[in-house]
Length: 165
Image (tube, rainbow, N blue to C red; front, side, top):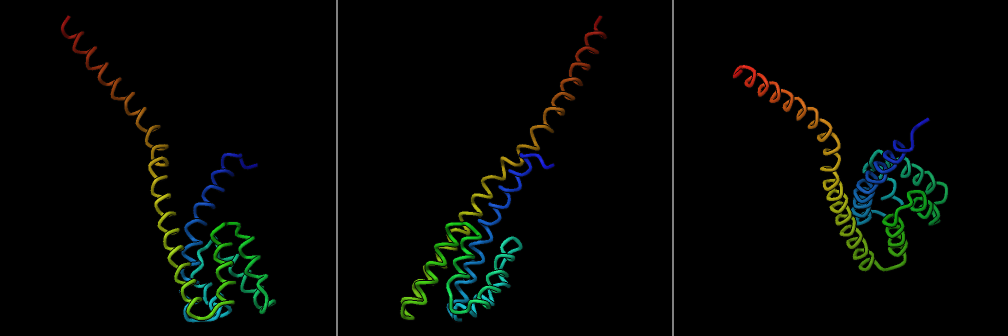
């Protein structure tokens, strides 16, 4: 049985990694949309999927083969990832299919910009959490070191007093 703390830690790691991988994937997907149809871009996007998001993308590709004219696979993809960013991207993807090419290009560029900002935000969040993680290991190592130094100083002081007498 896995302790609750380990489960929470693994869940937090998963969520943090998804916050990093999803914008990278959706950014690449947006770039692919600039030169390909949504179907083609989806097929090609598997190469840009990180290890956590790849199973979701594989399922998406399978579903678009089964339901080529439906938005169901994309909606299911966003639901299964369960992140606001994915849902918003899929809404934008649906808009792309309903507008002219100039507006579609603007929507894609906006989405790429948003994904770049989300990537930067996720990296900054990860960088900010690193000192806390390091502190967890440093503090337990410092206390024994201080105890050893204090013991050594006590012995030196006691030895110097004993030599004075």
